[in-house]
Each structure stands twice: as structure tokens, then as C-alpha cells.
Image (cartoon, rainbow, N blue to C red; front, side, top):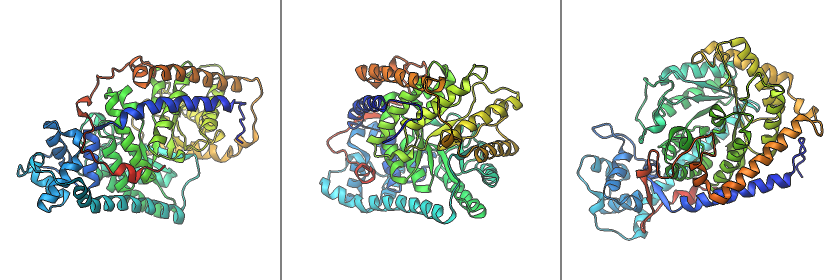
Length: 517
């Protein structure tokens, strides 16, 4: 039986998880009745449809827009695709190209029997599933032969806007000791209801997430991984209006980590909550099947809300994110549940409070590959103090056995990091991780002390919050601004027009094929 260094009452922890499960079940009952334009475009991509039309509109968008405009989205794109394939003997790609040229209206064909439609689609479905399985096996073979860094994984970002410059910086970071390279997305991509095509060189504050960019970076990291004798993981973002599409592209191209939070887009990008919660289900099914670790975004709550007063909202969100991921069949080991070192550095005993919360998260989610985020809110132009703040953060990371340590940069508040900044941050973490490797095994927490009291307080506040949320449901709780002090209307935000109830012909076999129970 698990023992708590903090003296946590695991009966209360189980009660909190049961509350979160009931909240997530209410969401799941809704999710399973609906589809979205993003889910349907994902199915197109999984069938191998790629490319753009003469106006550079992605072919998956062309196809799905065709049925959406005719009020047929709820019947699902696979019904119409398979029906057209039977009619003409074409591949999915050929059908998409005919529609893009205006040669075919897939909504006006006589309907073939469902069994025949499923049969004609089956080889393409099988090929897609096998391709993702092979990508996963390739990762596992690399790890078996090359090995990888020890946890906490050292996670750094590149954000030049140019995929080719990103490659240079990513390979340099790997040589410096990084274990995970996150390619930051260009500002605003989460609000695009399509995925740009091809290699890109002109992002702002980051680089466009495209399938070709994924391929380029995966190849570059495999090359440098072989050079340094260590597998290097690749991270990108599948939040936003194209959440499941980007998850599929990442699965096909061998990404290892994806930012994939159920609530982030709702709270911080004003994407409609119905749209986001439907999309996160399909995206997490894909990520689970592909062996991708998802990162959730609870750390963002503390950029708008106080880190001391609102710590319980982070825990409550982690618990809900965990249960939603379990409904999608995503294993606990692939859950990079998020939390952050974001208290005011002037706070007396702030380090003890941060330690209490990090240890609490570790004990409540013992199997998860937790993602621990560095100080950002209180970073300033004083790079010397910033480097010390990051050192304290790194101490807690190794002390509490975090899974992924997103390294802070001394120049966090000044500019996008230089390669030299990354070197200093990696050096900082490696020094502390080596010198304090077993501190968590050696140190106990005083009964009745500050650390134990803080952890118990946060857990109890989270339970009260979850009880309230269970009574009113997640949708209503989000409308009331329960997380990050941000209120969002159920029928507001971006993307609601892309949501539709499933019809009689709806067909999505990838859910049952990929969902790992």
C-alpha cells in the first residue's frame, strides 16, 4: 500500500478522484453524442488525405467543409468518402482531389450499404493504424538501443519561427544535454481552423505546427540522438481548433510529447467549451495509441490567479484532466499532468509551500510523468536572481521525483532564449540533479509542520471545489470562472459552429481500434 511522506489521507485522495471521475463522466456522456469539423478532418488525414487545393486550402478542410455547408456534418465524412470510393473505385486522396477541383459532389451520390462502405475503407484504416504502430516501435527501439536521459527529463524550447533555424538550435540543445525539445508554435495558430501545409520559415514567437515541420524536426533529432547516444524526444502543441488533427500528424511523424489540455483552449484562447471537450477526446485516443506523453496546462492558471490562494484549482484540474484522459484510454504513465513553481519569491517560506505542493502532486499521481513548470510570473530583468529562482525550482524537481522539468531561463523576462541561455539552464539543472539525486529518499517531513499542513490544506480545498463542480457540472463551473478567474459561456467562444450531433450514418472505427482500455 502506498505510504505518504506528507501524511496525506489516501481515503480523501480516492474520494477526490471519484468526484473528478463523476465530473468527467458527465462530460463524456455529452462528448460521445457529437462530432466536430476537426474530428472529421482528422479522419481524412488518418486515411492518407494530404495536400492543398489551388487556393492552398488543405484537402481535409475542402472535404469536411463540403458536407458541413450542406448540413451533413453529423453523418460523418467516412460515410460519404467510403460511398464515393465504392461508386468510382478511387482512393480517398483521389476523391478529395476530385472534390477540390469541383468535379464531384459527394453528398449527392446514391447510398451504398453500410457494410460495403466499411469494407472499402478497411484497408486504409488498417494501413494508418499500422503506420502509427511502426512509428511507436521505432521510438521504443531507439530507447532500447541508445537509451535516454534520466527523469526528470530536461525539457527546453526552441522558438525561432523558422523550422530550419529551429533544427540548428534543437540539435545544439541536445548536445548540451536536453532530453526533450519543444518546438513552440507561432502565436495565434491555436485559433486557426486549419493546419498550414509544408515547411514554414516565418512564424512569430514560434514555428507553425505542420506535418512537414514535424518530419523535418524528427529527422534532425534522430540524427543528433545517434550522435550523442541518447534518444531525444520531440514535443509540440495539439491544443486549439485543430487539436485532434495535430495529434494525428504527430502520431504519424513520431512525436513523443504533446501539449494536450482539456481546458486550456477554453480558458486562455476563448475556444468554445463544447468544441474543445469533444476534440480533446479524439486527440487523446490518438496520443494514447501512439505512446505520446500529453502535457496539461494547469501552470497557466497561476499566471492570472494567485499561486498561494488558487493552488487547489491546479489540483482539481489535474484530477479532472486525469479522468478525461482515462476515458480516452490514455495510460497514467503518459500523463504529463501540469503544475508550477509560481509563488512570489518574496513570500516567507514560499519554498516550503512549493515543496509541499510538488510532493503532494507526486503522491496523488504516482504513475504519471508529471510536468513541472518553472517560474515565469515573477521573473524580471535581474538574470542573477532569476537563475537562483530556477535553481530552487530545480531542487524541488529532483526532490519530489518530477517526470518532466521544463527548464527556466535566466533571461525569461527579456527575450527568446539564446543557445547560451539554454546552456546555463541545462548546466544548472544537471548540477543540482546530480548533487541532490537522492534527497527525496533521505528527507522526511515533520508531522504538524508547515509542509504537511500546506499539502493537507490544498487537498481539502480541492475536494470542496470538486464537490461544488459535481453538483453543477463542468460546463456550468467554467461559465462561473472556477479556473484562473476566467469565465466562458457554454455557447460562446470560437468554433461552436463546427460542432454537430452524430447522425444515423456516423462511423468512426478509429475510436475502438486505438482506444487502449
